[in-house]
Length: 330
Ligand SMILES: [Zn+2]
Image (tube, rainbow, N blue to C red; front, side, top):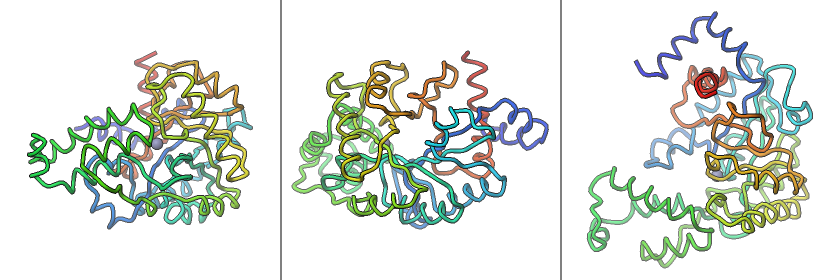
């Protein structure tokens, strides 16, 4: 039996469930990327599949929150309550600004009156929307064997395609969007890059969305930059410029930041300083720092990817994995 199944089985006993409930944090911040139709999800291949949940799974998850009378609050409310909500609470967040956040997730969240935050990347709002991970995989899928033979790469198996994806990813994490485009054009001999307008929200859509008080927007840095790979000055500019761009474009106070790629394992207090200086109120990461001292600039989030069934979702809300890490890593 896998760890996942074992824990799921364990928490099906009400006493154990109660025990975890008494030990868990006061809140959980969930994070998503895209929410797509079940049909589209079936067609997805490769590592990017992990970025999406199906519409039907998302509905199940939101239903679970509603049925169990779980308090869903905004990040602002969490700050107002000094990170100690009276009742166990859930915060819903989305990274990168996928268009389906508006087309698919929003109507479901609206139905339940659940607030949520979307962390946006100004560079893909101000220019033609484009991200390296979608381009890279689609090129790897498209390219025929001859292309790779010329480059002396064996692309016969899915595994090799994935290996190549992660190899190039390493390089992409050292570059800004402009240079990522140059690099991928070079690797794949491309004249033109893929138009991703259908994948990402545009400024008008964001403007419409934020007229609804349920929605908060935050920054995900100018270029979706892997901050730890860049000099301090660049990091400062990325955070500062993204905040300024979003505030100017949307007339919306930007108080929340999300680290692209989740940030490195070691907490760097330099970014903490920048965020504080620029009057951010929170920053979220994808790593679990909960066993370290509380820090509002490194709030841990709980990732909701594909294949999260109802009992997995419940396990995540009970914070079981987090509690076990806390016990063993303290
Ligand atoms: Zn991201």
